[in-house]
Image (cartoon, rainbow over all chains, first blue to last red; front, side, top):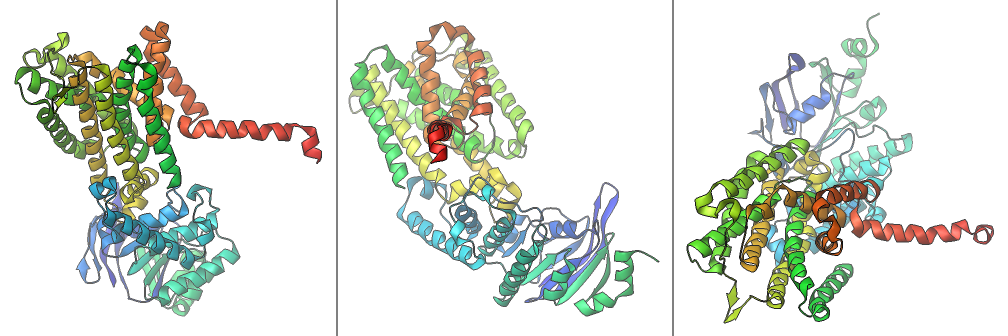
Length: 250
Length: 323
């Protein structure tokens, strides 16, 4: 599904990622964990085309996508969410999700400006689709709220609804549980499982170990830009190197 | 949807009955300029209000539209309508070409680059004396005509210009409410998230910059054929700042707001003639006051102000509080 091969990223002499390789298999939830500064977000930024790697290659569904810009990856059904949630604050919740349907609609500048009949039909269709994604994440009642006014937890759900609107084959979530209370976190766990059950591959960077151990079938541990370990939640919990990295040397 | 229809209805009523009250007086002439400046302000608003990309060089596109139309008709006797089309297309191509490098810049850098663009074009108008007539201007531009009607009187020009203004407003309102408008507003709020959603941000920014340039060129061509004389001062830095003030006064992203901003800034100096020499200072102060106290512009700020006035009364009355 997603294969990272010997990826290195250097920022002005600092090695954020050093020859990292692993793969993520289709239909699973894979967790990427590691202490702060391990290079997890950098890795996501490279996979989703926000940065290009200094060296190494990324393969997605058998295709070399190294250096593809994000908008091209969206058309290949890859999507992500952000650590600090990146909403379109001045737009309504519904409009946010309608932007998620950008690749599922076609009206160009001329059709839009002239309000051609095909354009109006398409507007109605994507409005309904957007509403159904809001229903999926349970925030349909907030459809007409301005996104900037949402409480943080709901904003997270909106970001997921918007990402789902792309109909992704893979969704990369950067710390989805950050800033959520325990109730919201357990609802999030259910939502992520629901996403996986609908056949979508999930990769998540996360600090909440309880959540990671509960929902992930495979875990990759990064430390200081290197891959430290890889395995099932049980294997990771028992791995000496991982314990040392997290708790320090005694 | 209903809301939009109502706004359009009010707008059209104002436009259609204004000449009846003014009966062709001097103010008719001013209203022609309100129309032209509305097109220019709407054009800038598509770029600044929707996509969040600033341009301090809009007067360049306005001027290029005017000069291409003017030179082709006055010097080379080309049909005015045909020259208008050439002006719009040429400016569109120019905007598209310079849009790619210039729109890679963000914020202050984009402001500086567009400012530079405006100044360069202004210098060209002044220096290419053989072509443009230089600082003394280009006279003898013919009026537009259609089926035997020559648009030479204020009343005829008024309706001609406002037909174009209404069309530009309608197209812009539609665009703002569409998939393209949403993608542009998404770029405004978070370019990286918009790209993750599949919006080709760099291309879309160039496209809206091009449309903005083409609308401005249309305004320029209409200006040239209405006034029949053009000189570089009408397309200087002041004009770009004036347009920016109009957009911000009316409200960023609000198409009808741009009409309001254009109307206020064109009409007010006529009533306060004493300000004439200090207009740039008045614009500056207006800009500061509006951005500080009414960041959403008049279109959003005035309803909020009215609401807060009505709300304050009951809460300040003790009988209401107790009950």
